[in-house]
Length: 188
Image (cartoon, rainbow, N blue to C red; front, side, top):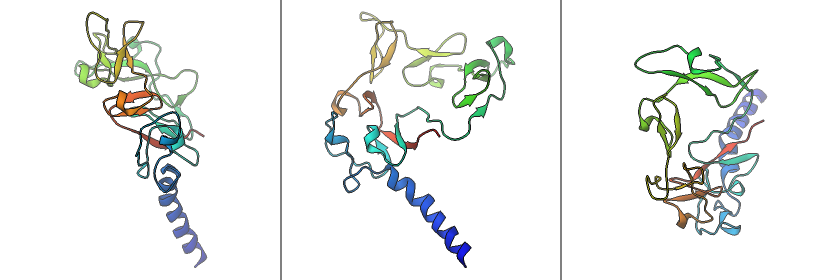
C-alpha cells in the first residue's frame, strides 16, 4: 500500500508543483506590478510572466518564441560546418545552423531552411540562402514590424520597454512581444 501512496503523492507533486512554481506571489497575482515595471493587474496564476520575479521555484520567464534549455545536453544529430555539408532537397533545403540546447565539439547541425518570410521568426525575413535574418530597415525606408525598432546596424530588433503600454501587448523582460512570456524550468 505504501508504494501506491508514494505514486499518488508523486503524481500530485508533478501536477501541482509547476502550477505553484509559475504563479506569482501574493495570492496568485503577479508581483510584476511591484518592481520597475508598472503595468497593474497581471494575473500570473496560469504560468504567464513579464519578469523573472513572476516565476518561482527555479523557473524563469521565457519570452515568446525562445527556448530555455534544461536537463541533459543533446548531441547534434547531423553535424556540419557549412551549408554545403548538408544534403540538398529542392522542396525543403537543409542549411547549417546553430542548434539550441546541444553540446559537443560544435553546436552546428543541418536543419530545414526557410522558403519564404512566414517560415522565419517574427522580425526576420528569409534570404536567398534559405537562412532567416533580421529584417533590414532604415529611418527613411523599410519599417520594422510592431514591437520592433530599427537598430543602429540597420536591422530590426525587439523594442525596449518598461511597460505594456509601450508595446502591442506585453513588455517581457524589458522587450516588446505580442504575448506574455511563460514560466519554464531553468537549465540544470
